[in-house]
Length: 393
Image (tube, rainbow, N blue to C red; front, top):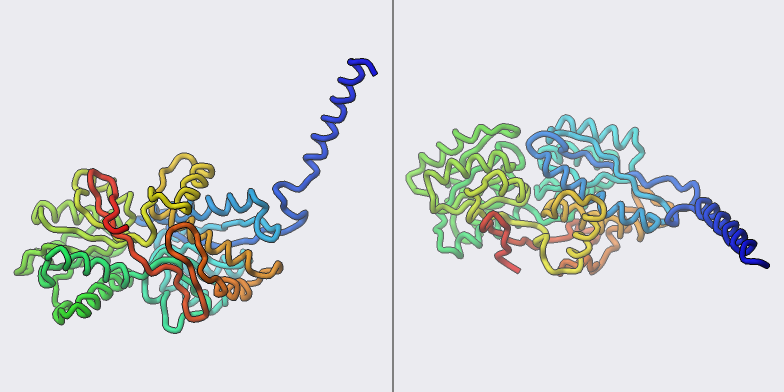
């Protein structure tokens, strides 16, 4: 065979090989397998939109990775997201649409306590898994736990207890603490957790401490500030339970009055947006976190940073998208443990079977019929030079 004929033969085989490649199912998906549809009602607009958008980004980054590996049992994962604007009525309508019309196997990543107050009863009634809500409220953590509500993060009670310990260890007296909270179930959850933590440390007058409030979805912080200002004792520490827009405005005002006061926020505030909104006024502000620092030298964090960049190279890593990513990783582990014909019920059984799961963050994940919360640890961070610095390893 001459050289010219050999080249023609090679070219023919190359064309045939290319044709066969396009006939092969992509990335291991079984032909005809339907996607596993997972629903999400969250805040993509409104004052909590940064939280909802980041949570969605973290979940989708991990789902994208799973789909590139062939999905779960051959099924690609599809996240169906509806915007509720951090409004309970919209969240309830979204839940009904997702559970009744969209044929989803679970709901995950809900943002907020006010929305959880209306979505949790729907999940229980419809008997569908409500997984990894971005809230530390008690409504999600009953004893014994609701079968259809499974959490990933630590509770607000655990976050505020950590705050109280930190404040008192710094030498602040209990009667030098004040509160500024959102006037709804979210603010109530954080406030009651802090009060109980103070009572546990022997301070019986915790409910009499100054407590300013503001209305959800507003920036009307002035009245709450005046409530604290009217107190006869100058606050040395103020615990805030709100969204970043309102908390940033309050802190800016309050720092002009009490420049040496410590301001402490729960994780729901939205750490990165809060720091940006505060600018130079962010120095010394504390935020408790329910995941490690996103720059930590841990294998799970290395994976998060790599896969987030591969999925969406624009946004920088942050605490909320990290929580969404890790939560999605645990959720997928449950899917893998479930039978190939996954149902709403056997998915819950599969997640409850998870024991001592290592997701690369230095904390192991264990669930059971009596334990529906993955993590109980709280990480404390402080803003220094407009960057978050971990205070406990």
